[in-house]
Length: 366
Image (cartoon, rainbow, N blue to C red; front, side):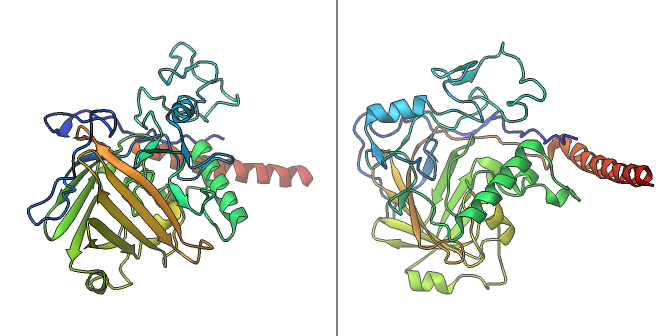
């Protein structure tokens, strides 16, 4: 029996905050100006930002990290959305909309349950990430092959396949509501947007940074996750203010400090349940170090390094960039949506059917 998953409630209806003029990405709205400074002389990270793009964390085989503008456009134009390939029938790659007259995938067909929203409902971005003037095909820059250096790649691939099949089909035991995914329960956002290691997703890729001399607040549009990072004089002092190891908050225990014009954040003790559902696996011992460098009025270069010897053979580094956005929009997320009772009921029916089949088999044998 097929168990239906709840729909994601993610439409943006109302602007919460909006600057007077929206700015385009660097290189598309005139020459960038020098990075503005805060009252204390530090680069000012305050503002509304986005990192929407079709670049992925890992790199496709055979691609170089940096590509030309023409190649970047070609890759973006041929990047599908939510299960729709850009060049397939019923999909217009120029608008990235599926054909509204094509109808739903046939029940039982290869596409049934394997496709979701097109870009009319989403905003994943329409270009590759541009970092320091370069178009990038992956966020990972170390190791050089652009792949996560797993200690056990086969085990990780199997886990990803199980999770993907579970999400697409809903075929899981679902012994209780707690068994649904953490983002599905609206405890934290999808796609690792809140961090540590802030990555973009299918929609809601907007952020608000508010910087004071003592704290940096990062508000994420997705589920309105908020990180409030205390700022210390140096790394040694900051690390001394990490919470006890027994405390594992959502989005990790994060402290920050300035290194020249770069703001550094170190996150430890990520909640184990979050580590299992992040865009990249992270064990309880994992440490994520993030760096924000405002290079102009149009760009904040963002790097993060993951050090987790339980999961990876080496530390690895990712790099992307934030550029100005129009602001934050309302986001509504309801735990399980109205589909949760159906998910649990379907699981119980599946159990009952299995029990009935077992009894029938025993009777037939006797």
